[in-house]
Image 1: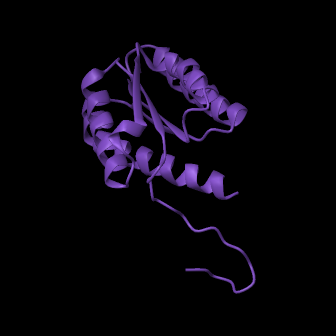
Image 2: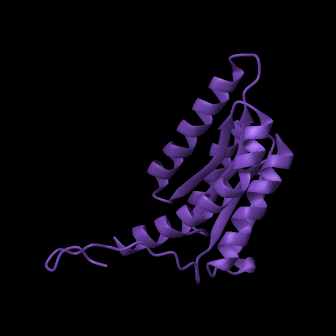
Length: 155
């Protein structure tokens, strides 16, 4: 519902009908990744995205997500993209490097290409935390992708 009579306010639109969505999934921590993917694809189809309009690609780990997302974004085939995976803290500084560089890369691809990318990569301290959050995060990433595709089209 609009808040103002004379000011255009673009409302959130979660209708996925006709959208083409690409998903890049990290295979590292695969059980969590599969949980994220199941939740994301179920949400997309529930919101009207046809299964035939969803493309899923996998990469070895989270650091490989940005370059694949870049290729997908530049292809012109997708209205929005979703990055999925899990980076779980270990005993070394590697966690910070992977989490920070992956997130920065995904953000840069979206800004450079103008294709919205929902970052559904979990960064958690434990596998238990990741497992607990995977369904919600997968769902949220799918909703974000639809909403951002619609918003950018409206702008």
